[in-house]
Length: 121
Image 1 (tube, rainbow, N blue to C red):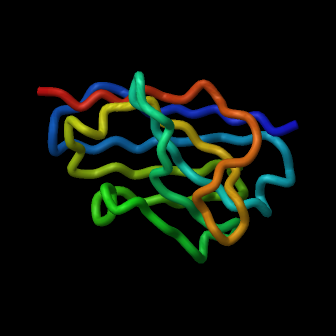
Image 2 (tube, helix red, strand yellow):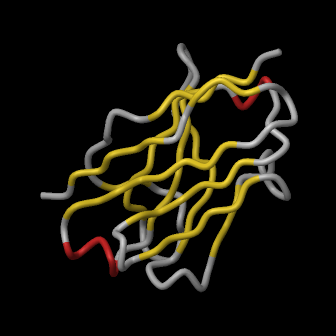
């Protein structure tokens, strides 16, 4: 069973930066594509970014392109989301999950608790 634990969220002013981390347990995850998602209360969870198992391929939702960067360190069992130039509309709970191989945007498996990001002056 894979356990995912997200961290790094917090309160930040518009234009600021945060780096989220998702630590996984389960050896199979190091050979699994991973993604970040977010959810605003009352709305559907939406895909943010995805990365291939070896880090060679990444993909981003249009609303974060040029601002967010996804990366991973399989030795540390961690996938990251560097978020720059944050906007109030980025306020949400952020989650990581395994994603469908090659597509990088369809979640697989159970969700963790997520980490809250609040962008406000």
